[in-house]
Image 1 (spheres, rainbow, N blue to C red):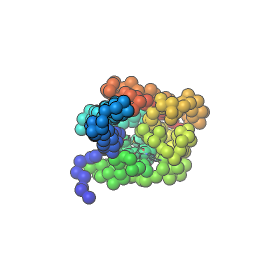
Image 2 (cartoon, rainbow, N blue to C red):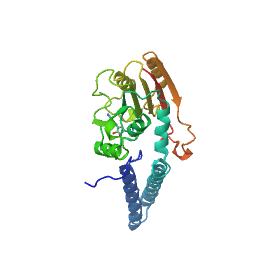
Image 3 (cartoon, rainbow, N blue to C red):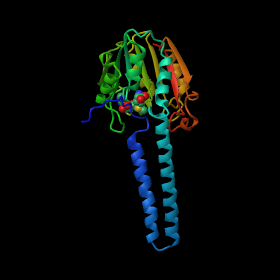
Image 4 (tube, rainbow, N blue to C red):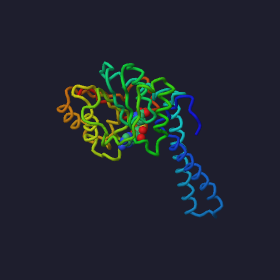
Length: 264
Ligand SMILES: C[S@@+](CC[C@H](N)C(=O)[O-])C[C@H]1O[C@@H](n2cnc3c(N)ncnc32)[C@H](O)[C@@H]1O
């Protein structure tokens, strides 16, 4: 395996998604061209129109996602990093003790937290599913390259059943993870599980697609319920941050972002 010598935080638009869209678009365009080998008839013309429309739609989606990937990337627009920096601003923590990053992906937020809080021990957990360009070894290499390997640890696990005792952590963060967790469709239960591993009074900041009606059909009810279970709860609308270009503010990328923060 090639040794990593630069941090690699990958991208929220995975390479695999672009590959699938590119191949599907190319294949539809190929079928469209092949259709000219058929003798013209009403049915063939309708087929041609459908193939052309499908190819254009898929190739435009590919173009949108490819540009979104560039804007998000650390080498391009840098938006991913700015969104994570912004999230940490909502964590009201003195940096003493242990912080958990739930669904840490490539370790980007875990490592940012470790750099922001030089006294802290920071744990990143993830199940590192096949659809993402993320891995535990990549997190460890990133932490080493960023000089925080001694204060970070990465653990494989399921956010729906965290492998830590009650009250184990002094702070917790999570970014764009809860909607991805297939093992727990009840998002209130998932947030409660995240809070379970925190000490009473410990701060948290969780960002997700809270404005997605599909994932959070009863956001206000959920927030009201949660507010009775923790010492302090705030909801922040993070959809309109001015460091995020309009191009990315669609439901496909970051147009449904919200953040809950407070103290357990
Ligand atoms: C959009 S990525 C966000 C990664 C990272 N938090 C970031 O902001 O860069 C979603 C992450 O959720 C993780 N994930 C999905 N289901 C999970 C589960 N059941 N337990 C832990 N992590 C999970 C994925 O592996 C992926 O790393």
